[in-house]
Image (tube, rainbow, N blue to C red; front, side, top):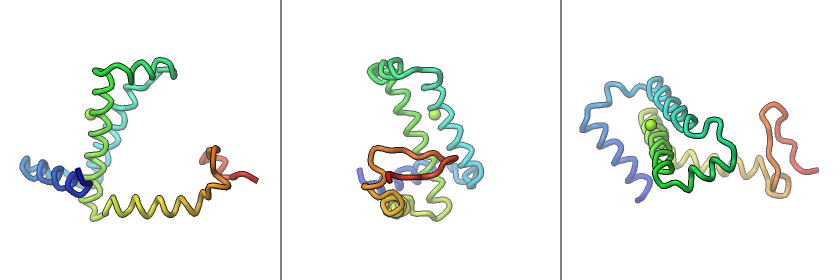
Length: 121
Ligand SMILES: [Mg+2]
């Protein structure tokens, strides 16, 4: 399914249920963060081995899949309600990140917001 087709499907779902009256940016953002919290609950306190088992269990993995879907639905809804083309914004952000983190400086390393990106010497 095309991403824009997915956006139209979400819009149609919301329109049919008259959800728009609740969909202001602040409440959509709170809904988004709530769904991220639901996903975090699935992962909370689990080590890497336990997480691997969760992902190998079809029922538990389905729960994670649903939380990720909820997050994406609210993210797409928030973006179209604020007149942001999320797909264009993602493309532009990837391009910006390509310049900010060139492969020769960023490959295989990570950065921390407290320490900033240092890159390879
Ligand atoms: Mg949920």
